[in-house]
Length: 491
Image (cartoon, rainbow, N blue to C red; front, side, top):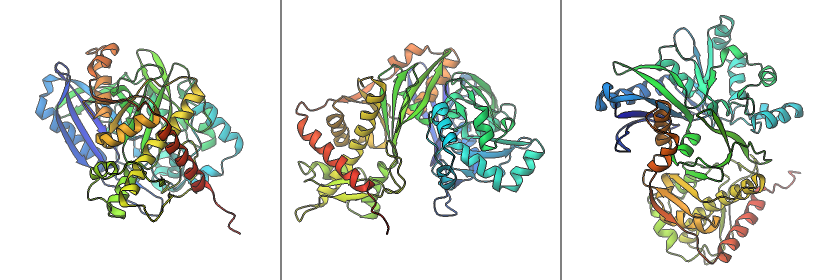
């Protein structure tokens, strides 16, 4: 069997890829867009049935292409933290999926007792926030009558997208998840690698409604798809899958995914490092070993460029930002803070708002476009500074993926501001590649050491020798962040 299928169930689309194990490349891909709904301000939902049907369509397309006899198995990567509730007997969802971006439980999280906040930080490595799954699950249990009825009847399942797709793929035979997805629920002790009984009790979530937990490289069941039965071998949340796809498998490795937001994962080895402003999370579990990472996110990266394109109509396409930003030698003192919906790590301030400052009569469109790209690179630097300080480990190089990694100006700027090389791979689909690698390792088709050999670089951006102007740029950005965080007394 020459191929594995990587199923990547993202927030805006579901995609499946056929990975040729001998050639070491993707040879086919299928994609279906997935819609979102916004029933109230701050609420974000999806139709779980739509996610399932489009995942099944993409899988069937890949199986038709490769032939079931040539497929060794399926690996899954998925949007994290999103919660699905469904009927254990039928697999039917009982309410819309609550997406990771949804803020409906913000007030509940902000009012948690200090003792609960302490437990969450110590045991899960997370901050108490509506971003994570636990408060979403509690909301469903408190507000959805169909879920309450199924709970009384012992038929309710609550899980993340991976566990829901696995349940449907295996016709209800497998109800489980992996360590990385479990580590994003705010219910999972990342030290013992199991649900925490005290946190389950405090959130009022019965253990029996949650999936069983296994290592990332486990055999999770047998999928029935495309008229065939194929092993599901390997599951990881999308950011952790990208870490594996980037072959960032050693302490001191890091990767940045540039999407709507920016996600930086920094490998800390088998040591779980605590941090005040960042998240401690399971990087992956492979071959009986657990690796950890520090994670930080900037909520708006690609979406800030989209704002230039759609909101201000300054650029015709996102790609055009590279040419326009390059047309000026610097931003002319202009600084931008992309806090459209508050600031994420390390500030975690939902009241901060976006800010464009340092404008003079000489400011042009090009200065503003450049300042927006600079804000993305500076946001990554702020995260990395915290990671190196808290871990005591120095970053060796940063590996990049995601849509904005195609922007050569931004990648060079990122190297200059971080002061380390930025390594752009030949294959940009790092999340899907990580799912394919996981499946291959689990199935015995590839060794863990081979992952690094499979990853090839398209270009390495080395930092400028003269660091002074970029340090000044970064200080200017930090000053703008302080202004964005400042909120005078409303009285």
